[in-house]
Image (tube, rainbow, N blue to C red; front, side):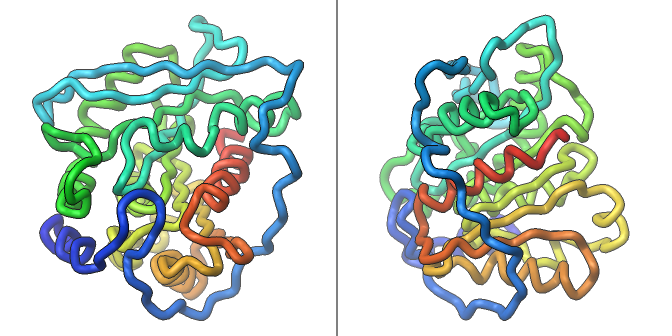
Length: 287
């Protein structure tokens, strides 16, 4: 999908700002979902007596946009600057910015996973996925859809090099993952599958209509089978955006491409589903 076509599709959908969905519903494609396993009680609740990671706001020069841009970074407990870490790039929705994921308490979810020994240590980068000079979520956020597509250039050309210069991180695809919610889910599928030399692990949580068609996402089935290490998705059963995920799942099943799609029972377009997505995705990467 071209930038112009994506902008028209998003704006025509007449969605509501933020993470509330409303992009317009399309019929769900009939697929076989992967089993839903409920997350344990308290997985997203701050737990006393455990080591905690830290959150920091960083700024980087974007040559692509021509401005200084911001990203929120999570460093795991007992972060050691002399040790190398893999990186998860975690993207927000169309009504959000570099702070939106904080509503989903990723630091608490990850701290709890580490306390239970269930996730590999990693740095999580939560950038602003709106690559334009005024990147604030204000006014008609749907008119900024082209800036979400353009973020591909800022991500690859400016943000990743900045992170790799500031932190002691691995710089190969096997230590790089990308995932996101809603509009960020579409970005993650588009950029992750479009650059399998950069990202080995790809996740989409309630991915929005900016998601490319399966034929565009996976033009070479055998290449995707060989190079992608994880393609993982979740969407709520009551979310009208299920079409985007189920369409890709159906294509993958037809062509034998490993792909997970979990239907969250009675789930809507909100952080209940997205926190569940992060909780599960984080346990599967960098292992």
